[in-house]
Length: 574
Image 1 (cartoon, rainbow, N blue to C red):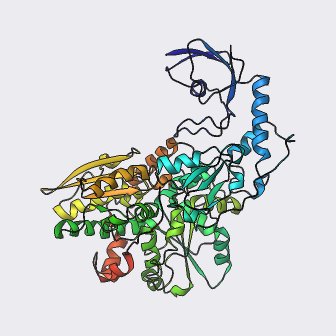
Image 2 (image 1 turned 90 degrees about the vertical axis):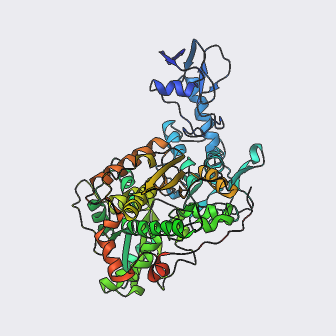
Image 3 (image 1 turned 45 degrees about the vertical axis):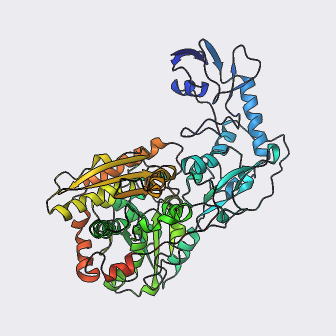
């Protein structure tokens, strides 16, 4: 342990700690922009400078290690003036259009500018004058707002191993740009949106489509139907001043009706349905010698990754559509018929934690209902903006029911929102289907947690099934390389593109730390435990749809509406 004094406070910290970490341990806040708790230290922005006794120059707290007897001052006039000047220089190259920015009131630069009383900038303003990049249907870039912190580059290259973003040129001319082309669509971007969480400003964001929803709601001839993904429920409270997981489902449904949705249903219904289809597909492959290991296909960012980097392994993907797309196909067929509504009038909206879902719903394969299966995808953040715009007080709002036929769900569907949840939900059902025995303890603890790769073995009446789970695409790459090399021991692999699974999706409320993802995961399992039914095959509405419409898993109707195929992207990659 190293003894150090910060602003007159004596403390001991582990050897190798930085000034920033030492200050955090005693509650002294030092401002940062380029620093990210889950990334490597960069030392780019210098906003964290402080005075070290005996040193003539100011030191960057994020990179400077402490030493025995070090004395640090973080609030002297010299330090404050230096930080203010650094912020003024950054702002001199930054567009002053906060009111039009997607990160207005949720921007780290804006917050620091207010904290340091920046009113009249002495430096003349000159931006790069670069155009916004709206080349993808999911994510846009505004390079003029980039402050060169490089957090997005690390998120894309290290955490996700996609390398869609990189640094071009040096010094004053340095820019973060898409690799392999000027526009993001030309890069190997999989639209996972992790760069959005990494960015401290509004240089990257989701493509907002709130106006499309409002237009549909205003049209008296349009029936607006929504589905809510399980990860959205635990995070939506963060957008409206509630704690993580504190918004009850019935209150969430009531809020959506206040906005103007005609029918409120749940993606959890088709998550349960996915387990029946995907579980039976796995059993069929095991019995008939199909392509193994089988990969889950619920995460569209992961599908994009496989199509881009591992097109030779596309046969390993489950043919099941994601729960979002299953819902869209059924909403305009089965549900429309049950509800006696013309499917041509249905406007199907999904509320998702994921930016890649915006791309997924536009894929040409996703129109098996005879229409575009899902018309619009809104992220958790976009729904949060709608709630704030509508002025809803969720502390006083009475709850509302979900509509019939595709609104019932089980605990197994709820845990789809966390990494390992799809695997655990599948095992709950597959075990009972294969063994014919009741699974008394449905908690597969080994599949849970935020660690990058998890593995387990399950004994199904003498047949041992080996499974693996990965979240974050750099972890997925490790498993994929094993499969490609022919050394993978697994039968079934769940992959989620985003760290922590869907709870950490690119469309979730902005979070700067994995600690928030862990908090959301914990809430997912709290909700699972509270569900009366916790196995997908016991969902009464799932049973009904097979009896009345689909007839059997992997049957003709299921293959037509619930299954699909994927195609190599043929993009250049690093």
